[in-house]
Amino acid sequence: MSSPVIQQSVQVRSAMENISIEELHSRISKLGKDEIILDVRSPSEFAEGHIKGARNAPHENVDDLADELEEYKTVYVHCKMGGRAKLAAQALLDAGLENVVCVSDGGMQRWIAKGWSQEK
Image (cartoon, rainbow, N blue to C red; front, side, top):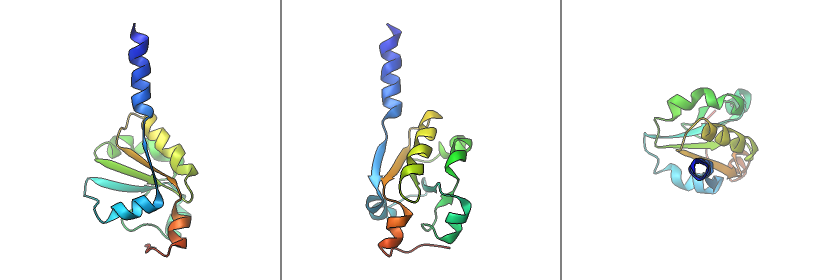
């Protein structure tokens, strides 16, 4: 009898919003102080250019930040093209976060190609 409850819990935790880099770009002007953009590329990639206000944490280390990230309403996770964002977002879900939005379609490569502003 407890199996369906466990299964349901797993299904809820594995549900995550996936968006495109274009959708993230459209949301940026409306982001509140309780929302964060987490860039999970390497520190050297981040230093070459990143979305204004983004925080860097390499994808393999994001679960170390789970307690801190839990305080945010929304954590937007992105990378260069989407692959590392998926891995990092899943790691955060596995750590118990329910506020993760994965930018799984595109990333900084497309951001730069579109000519959108970035910080260095």
